[in-house]
Length: 239
Image (cartoon, rainbow, N blue to C red; front, side):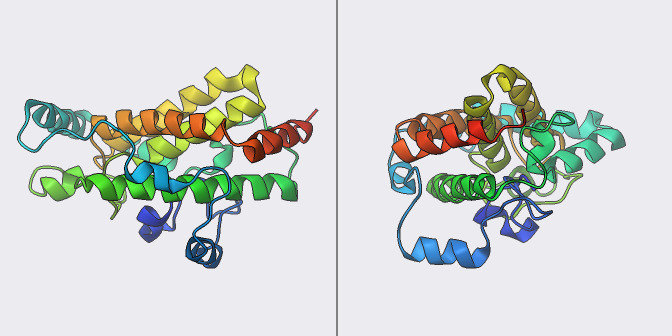
């Protein structure tokens, strides 16, 4: 399921390639690879110190606007909005391509391995970013005011893992199937926006996740291993 890695492990670790049969990195694999201090395409080390816009300061006008947006959705959202937000939170990786699959089913082993590698590297990088800023989620910062209508996440809020992951994966899918990139972006934006609707993220978390996802993708494009694997993914596309 397309959820974030370690910081959403309490939710079955789901914002990327999911627990419902998608090609995830297992906890054992992740622990072993982390202990080795290695990465596949992009090292998380760069994100421990890289320049990145911080979240709004507590008490600032920007923070007040963030909270107001969450509360506005809380007031106007419908049960259908909440159901959709939970559905996109739990979406599998094939959410992006809907009824027009990119790859044969079942997924070829090479495709599973490729997405596992992305899952690992992206998870380590987003985890580093979340720990840098340690922003509390809306329902933790304002427990008397913010009442989520979807399952709560225990990780920090900034940047949004769902927004980060969805952006990374649509950028990657755009490398593999460029003609469908705008379609993928629309799906990713839907998933990201639903995190605010559901009451588990601020709008600036979402915006930061998109910026982070695009930056991570720019780092991927510098990796010869990634570029080689993308070409192989193109060969495995459904004809």
